[in-house]
Length: 161
Image: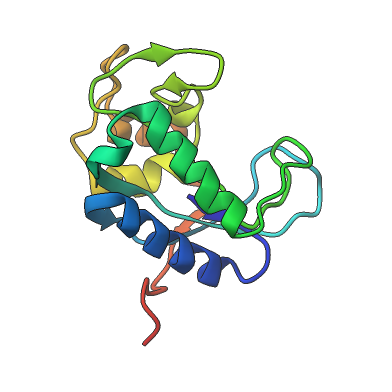
């Protein structure tokens, strides 16, 4: 998940509440401050994190969960104007266990996740043993390969103090 518009920390906190409503169990990584990757010049830094979910039965397929994630984005003002542009909230479905899927609306695991330190750093923190089901490469090994430049773990709290 990520945000760089309209109070990104508040956006992530609201998104966390939305995710908890979709799942029986939810765990969250730390919140990371990251430099934008791609997109228009001049956009602000992002706050990013990863959540591990065990969805409720109503969202028991990746497609159903993705639809629910997109609804959470829209509820928080997400408007898709340009690829990799600034956003109030971005919720990506990174993986669904060891499943491999490729359809018009969904590719699992996420096709660019192994090349994005802003995804891998929180993923490696939360699920250090995670391995890509096709390549076998681990999240932490991929992060080491890429390096962590522009990715900083914060002390920001998920809940207001």
